[in-house]
Image (cartoon, rainbow, N blue to C red):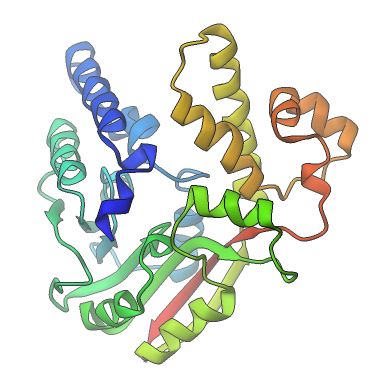
Length: 298
């Protein structure tokens, strides 16, 4: 499975090089960097920590609760949680992400409360002492049900899993164009909401759906697309892979923007509308949405 990941820009060597340069610039320019200084690189999903913030309010965790972030990337969520008063452990199958996570965490002085390990959750557990397990946009790249079982094993009695991820939403069969487009972006099929829920219920969890987060993510994705496409105009040599992923694919996937009229949409996101078609947001069936839910260990 890992051999497909580095074909995506954010998992590949070019993005890793960009992150290393970003960290070096912060190290040289700031004597006492703050964890938020690294937000442009260490949060690889839309809406930053908005969903996680809502979750923390919803569950009212005890101080110093221990949280496991599976698929932690560069550790942005772990550092956010440490800043909020919790302990965090992050694991990721990509060793270069773990190395960068440790480097950033050391720079901001959070190494006593945030640990990182290069672990594949499908192959190994990490103990059973956690109060919360996070899966934030990571299950879409794991086609198996095993992560739900591992999460159950990792949690103390009464612990919870927080999931924020894409779900497949289109009811009608995909067109050939849609099938090719989705396969180009993501080789592993997206799960439906029902498949998500069944996976965790089979592992022994009780599901509590929080909200559909599709509009929030779509707003973020379209604003990001405009920024990237503007950079491309200013610099024709701007990274083509990033333009493809975030300036074309992301706004197509996250097209829940029909709360705007088409006229307002074009005025607000002219470059994105020009690139993918101004009427794209008004198609009847969306391809994917974003779901947030809690799975409670029972």
